[in-house]
Amino acid sequence: YHKKKPKEKVIGTPKSHVRGNRKPPEQKAKRSACASRNSERRLDWSCANPGKWDLVQTEYDGSMAYFNTPVIDVESQPIEQGLAKLRDNPTDYLGLFYQTNMKNWEPSQQKYSLVHRTKSGFSVKHEDGGA
Image 1: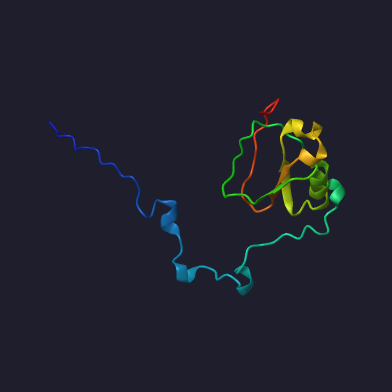
Image 2: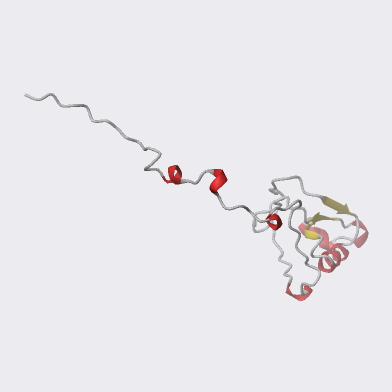
């Protein structure tokens, strides 16, 4: 009678694993001097056609999400002035929010908030009827 050997589990050896076949750092191709960036890439939107920007209206419940704290300017002016400011500077502002029924108020009582484009990840979730 033969005694069975316990099966050995071989999870992976450096030769059989994908990362085991990597070149040592000194053998890797060198990056060109132009490939390294000292500052973040900036897009120039000044030549963009302003007619192709869409202003989409979204009703939401007042809650917002973001990764970094957004820069928000609160203005006590008529909402139409804020919309004009947003249309005139789409590269500076991400959006504008205000209380839905405030458009029917006296212009002297209206106020809105302009959200700057700062890569904050600012977003709202659509909800019919708003808050």
